[in-house]
Image (cartoon, rainbow, N blue to C red; front, side):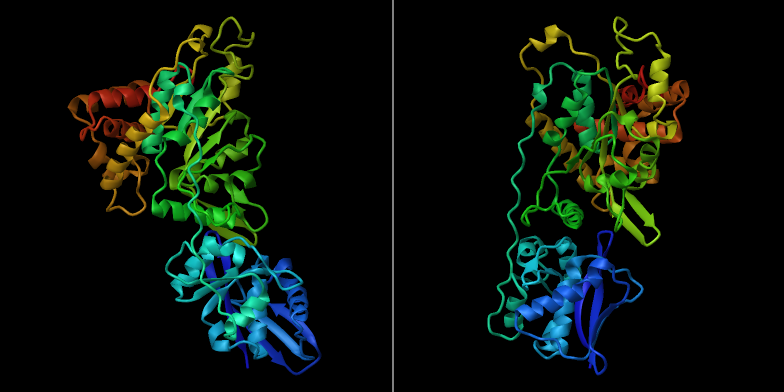
Length: 504
């Protein structure tokens, strides 16, 4: 008779239910695992054999076959150890079969039978809840999985504890959710001397999740400004926190089961590969753009990134998701991020400073910023020149609003947008609006429409550029608590679209 246990296989952030079938039949003694297992799953038989031996349980001299169904779905990861052991114990009548079938299990086993933490406990708990089953997992994963309140999470430190639970000797205590991670200390925007226009652009970008490009000479404060973006962003909503944490769970980034309400801030180095940025590699894991979901992706020295890496950003920026297609995997990850890019105006960095620029002006700048293709440049809503700060400005006292004051205005604008899009699934910010909805919420008054028409004709805005100006203008109006997009909002939005250094 076949015994069954259940676990999950990960496809992107989706956890698909896998049935682990175990048959103990007459024949030459063997222990085989079938159903497209990878190397880690195939090696589970040795870990399971040693763990049972540590519990003084010997395998019978029979043919043991483990089948992972559906058989055409690739199975990867060490979390199959525990469900394989459970199916085998059920087949040997050590634990009740019916009880085992009512749980979804995952966990890696040591040779002494102790359970080791694995990635993906949060998505696994979601899958267990959808299938009306409890989740059995290592103790180190319990606090993370318990955030899914719709299912019971049973954490165990060893296989022995699991057996005692199923036999009624010592039932496991359900896990409690981990602590909400404390908000990190963010740097204050007031520390930045001067750069008032760049600060304003930062506020608009944060309010509407608009992509932003800063161009300026070395030391002008581009990185300093970007580092203060997390301090003005509102905390994650409950739904956003769950989405973000599921990706972090698959990447093993959740700290002791705690879920953070702070928005992600990722800053990959310009030597990062395409798989690191977009996702891929072994198992088609999420990349930096997905790890920045609902947060900020800061790419310093933007033109220094490989051209192929930059071009792969175009579709994710538009769609808010990325499909990582490999020969043996096809994964879909969400990636609604706010892209903040920084670049020098040229290779030497001093194109805008005549006394320090090289002899190749302006060709030096054209060659350098030319590494950013036109279609990619067209996707930046805000383009800001960050001029050098004079020594006299550095000696001035702190001026301007603090991060807390800016964050308050950003949060108010975001709340207006949340109410605006509450009946539209998947839409949260003005940057998401398009088509008929964009026309309804962002059509300017007569003066604004006339100005926008002149700007579009004078500077040759593309259709994408035209609509992005409307989105930014809608955000500026939200910051001004205006229900109508007016001429001054269009003027400011268009000014950020047109730069002396970076032409539209």
